[in-house]
Image 1 (cartoon, rainbow, N blue to C red):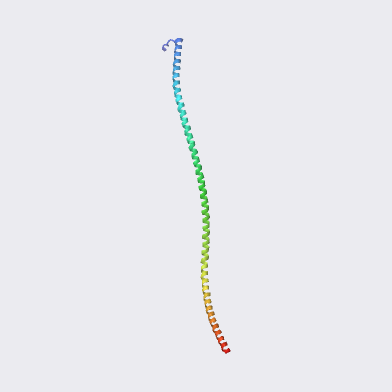
Image 2 (image 1 turned 90 degrees about the vertical axis):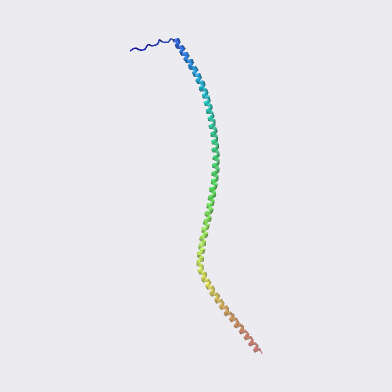
Length: 166
């Protein structure tokens, strides 16, 4: 097997020229890339700074919004507590009123029961009163009759005394 023939070795001077040309081309390319990258990087940094500023402004707005909401929440909590306190106070008052009404109802129930039992007693007492009034009327009539009889007896005595004196 034969190998393809090798090219003759380049001379050192041409290699150095090639190396110098390559380095120069690399330097120019690097400089172009660096300028482009630098411009891109500057633009990117500016964009990042703008984004950072916008993000910071958004955070500040959100913080203000959160602070405002915290104030509103505090006010609502205060209002809710006051409302709960008022409801508790009203509930206690209503409970006291209901208790008082229940006591009044119980008292009225007892009075009604007493009145019902007293009603039969009243009927009996009214009957006794009528009987006593009838006795009084009878006694008054008897007293009137006795008084008339007494007056008649006195008249008779005076008549007799007048006749005896003559």
